[in-house]
Amino acid sequence: MKLRETLCNISYGMYIVCSRNGSGTDTRCNGQIVNTVVQVSAEPPSLAVSIHKRNLTHEYLMASRVMTVTVLNKDATLAFMGPWGFKSGRDVDKFRGVRTLMGRTGVPVVLDYGISYFEAEIVGTMDAFTHTIFLARIVEAEPIAPGEPLTYLCYHELKKGKTPMNAATFIRAETPVATAPPQPAPVHSAAGAAPLKETTAMKKYTCKLCGYVYDPAQGDPDNGVKPGTAFEQVPDTWVCPICGADKTEFEPES
Ligand code: FE
Image (cartoon, rainbow, N blue to C red):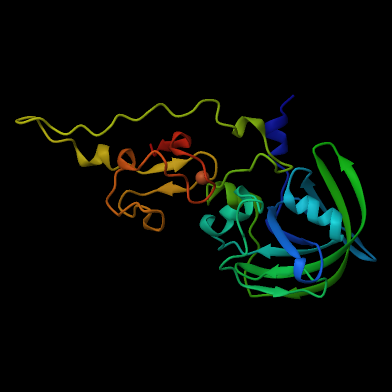
């Protein structure tokens, strides 16, 4: 069976689905990237969305029975999408620094990199093994900004984005089968020895989990790594600013 090859031929878009939990001043909100959003009927207009049962957004959808869906622009960056796809709302506030509007369902709508949005009320659920399929009736639909929708294909092939393990379309082959071998520490030349070539010491490294590229020329100043720092010199406590993976999940660009 050619499962991997054939499943890769199914087309998807890329969306941010948000929901809420609690009420009044105790209302908490969360959202995540989802590629499995489809229109399933025209009368009434309705959507189906598949969400992993372990995700915080799943918990909120079950509690509030309402959601917003932002259709992402193809210009959306990995840096923007990273927290929505690779981090949990249990650990970070994904809305920090993100433009939103409050929907009529009481759920925020993500506006950044959005071309349109929907609001929907959940009318049914179906168990789908690791996931739940939410059937939701659309109650609002508006454009946000001109643009073209980001497709799953573009996300993977042009942006080199990865699929989180809790995505409905995760394929096990994407799991790193082994951590990258430790990179040799830069060798400081002894007296009279040739200096280490800069091209070796200053290679870019890519996160195997989310596709983030560490560029030594840029460093990661937001997290204390100055521009001009070779990857090997980055502290072992440093983690991928997009998905939180540690240094062993990075591999040098070929
Ligand atoms: Fe990463």
